[in-house]
Image (cartoon, rainbow, N blue to C red):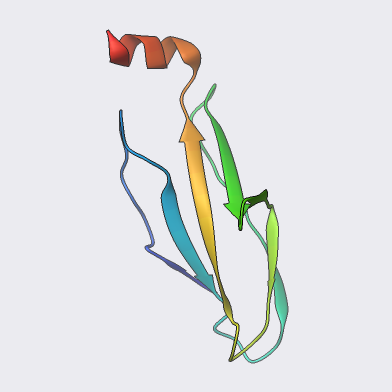
Length: 83
């Protein structure tokens, strides 16, 4: 499996991050996805507008999926940034 881009930086006012997940193997596989964010923060990982925690990818053709990662800071943090 590969994830492109491998990392991304964000901060106040930055939008969601797109990630392409690709099955680089020769067999169909299901990939369980885990995102770690700081305490109090939340995230949603979605594919085609639907929240996902795993993706099933075929080898060769149709071997990748575009995912959208949206990370939200805690409300107190958002207030501090906007003041």
